Length: 242
Image (tube, rainbow, N blue to C red):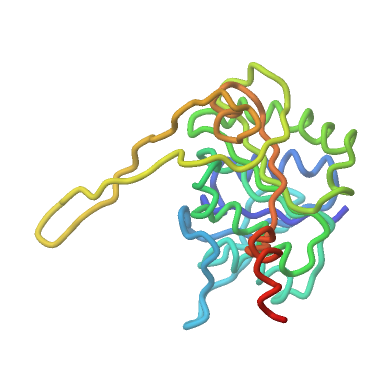
């Protein structure tokens, strides 16, 4: 199995090293990830200038490249630039969960969207809390076994996985929840401001939502799609085309 790994925390982030080391048990691993952290860059790509893409010395047995651009561009460089196809694309392990509306901003999740756009057979984003990487790694075999046992990658090709800081319950299939984090603008100097994050999550104990599931100890697996059309509204309105 040919496996491509990326992230938005940077090519030398501990999460990508841990994921690549684990993925070597599944097949041939290539890592192509941002030169520097690209958190919150979502699905952005660089189409207005050149950027650096060069080999990186990451770990034995793993071919790696450092790309001075976004996670989506890392995927584009792998598939379009190098002209390669992969059986599985993994993005992560992200430092911070990507749940609820925060998925919109995530470079980690955007990478699997981009992989899907370029025909990847399967793509999975993996995220955990800021301080729980070592704990998350211990659950990778369990998560992969769940994917295999339930043939998830035969049913769909795009998934978002989030591992709580403390796993106290089983794996749960979820859908996207609501607001998890928001920001306020803090003045830092003359004509200078900074966005400062704050949690706005409200627990409704609806464990069908990724937000509520993860915050209550479940490992969350959410099937995603790049399709932005509201099918219900489209169905209601398409009669206007007559």
